[in-house]
Figure 1: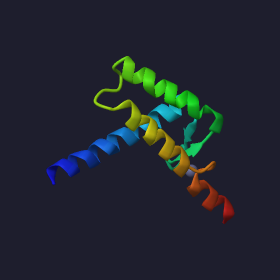
Figure 2 (figure 1 turned 90 degrees about the vertical axis):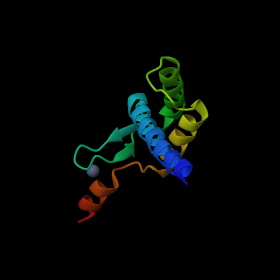
Figure 3 (figure 1 turned 180 degrees about the vertical axis):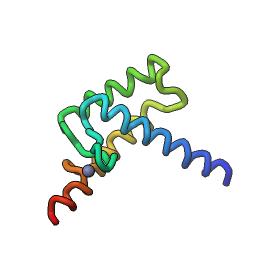
Figure 4 (figure 1 turned 135 degrees about the vertical axis):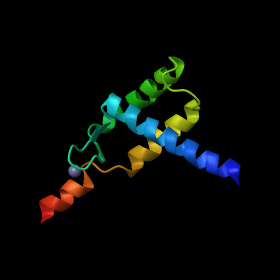
Length: 93
Ligand SMILES: [Zn+2]
């Protein structure tokens, strides 16, 4: 049980790195008002994997498996909208 809790926390860390890497790559932007991710340039996906790998190689990201990070970036990309969902809601009102 302790093992799976550790795994969950680890995956949260991997996810946080994935969003950080995505923002650096220009794949995502963070909404200034809501601090939510949106996709800024979907063509930067490959660049994000490259930056993530480079950050692991340089030791900037530690204790994270390359495949886990790539996977997390992919999932985050799939789950992220092109516009901040909160801003879209407010614009609709
Ligand atoms: Zn927003």
